[in-house]
Length: 89
Image (cartoon, rainbow, N blue to C red; front, side):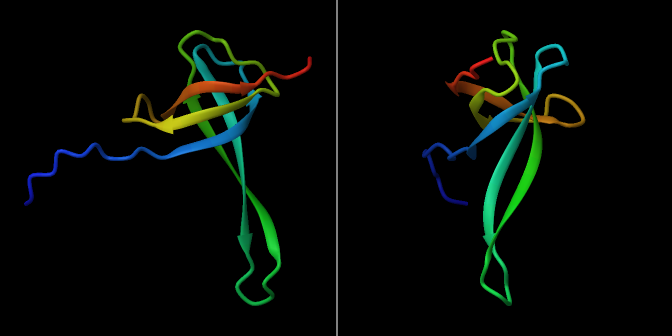
């Protein structure tokens, strides 16, 4: 094993908050585009993530940046880093 003092880069993604009904937790919808293997057309794919929102600051429709963390519960292993844009409503 090598002596590697570099910090491991954490995965960070942007997505839209679709639910904030839970206490200190938001559901974030992350959309990505993948290329179809045979036809080459780009297709939208989405993933829902549960993220920790310690201050309950996020509202539905906000675009947020989340980063990966050690698991906090069965489904929650992401944390809200910043709110990129607020929703109009």
